[in-house]
Length: 146
Image 1 (cartoon, rainbow, N blue to C red):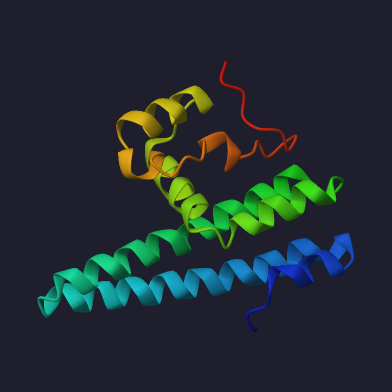
Image 2: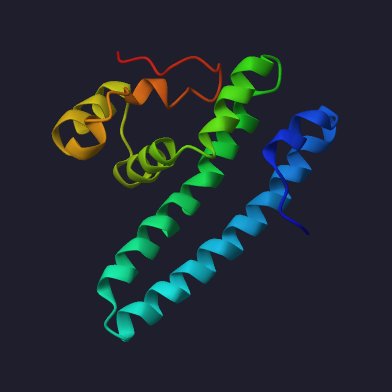
């Protein structure tokens, strides 16, 4: 199994895409496991600043499967939407939002927006709205705030 660019995903037949994503999920899981091991080691040897950096990286890596699962759930009909979601895989802010949202399990986009402005001030200063980063998996449209 080897790491591949997500751009290759859209060049294979639809029937093979889920299998490729499953391979990618395994690679991501290995990477996150390795990063967590590195994190533990850095903490043990007292390198807290380095540990904080590795922790942030591990959290972003752990968000990647959520982005890919949203691609699978949204389907393949709207290629522009699929491409937009796949770009989030490489977007630090998008991965950060996914990582934080999974921890709080919001009921809807309105709750994500409240968190965006109250609990995540450094991220909200980016000028990007959370609904511009997160898309509903079933229909590919931005989450409803109602």
